[in-house]
Length: 211
Ligand SMILES: Cc1cc2nc3c(=O)[nH]c(=O)nc-3n(C[C@H](O)[C@H](O)[C@H](O)COP(=O)(O)O)c2cc1C
Image 1 (spheres, rainbow, N blue to C red):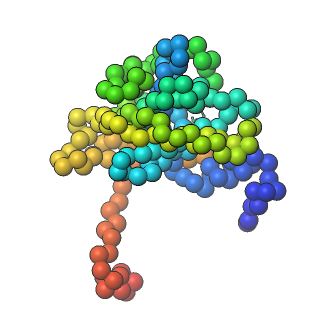
Image 2: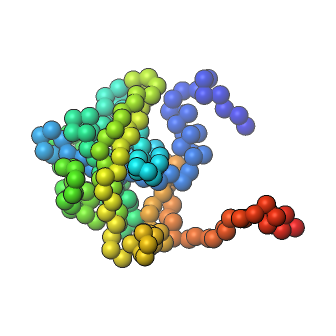
Image 3: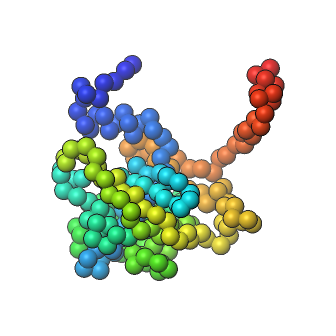
């Protein structure tokens, strides 16, 4: 089967794109509004860009052409926090995706605790196993106003990692991080089952692999 996006409606393209690009990491983005109201919402069109200096990006779509609160807050404050979702708090992440009005405190509505940040004024999710304090570097509109999105690029200025997950020499205990990935629709996956696939170091080794 082949699909030509030029011949398809946007919601259908979304179904195909988000159905094959899986599993997606989830940026649970916390911000603060100009009136001081904290906001938190999940964004799975999310990826790290480069480690040095560390940059990440995620994209925020719109609600029928109206910007989401996360984007509005980042535009105004220039700051945000990406929190990592584990299975303990996945349900609360799903609640925070509801279409709350900008005046509603989504931390309260989702049963979350405000955590203090070192550098940015946005709060972090205290329950999250890891959080990345970010300063916005670029906001790039992509596509049309109704179905397009804004690519938001941020520089990570502080990492928070739960003590028991920070191993020696900056290694992270990814098994116990228990990060949740997004599949399509309301489906998610866990990262608690892993396997090791050592990389071949020399060309010669490759021929052994195919024997
Ligand atoms: C797991 C998950 C991932 C999501 N990813 C995105 C995304 O990448 N882009 C987007 O615009 N909305 C995404 N959403 C929807 C937003 O979270 C939702 O529109 C939310 O209400 C936005 O909140 P805000 O207005 O407070 O920013 C996602 C929802 C869920 C549950």
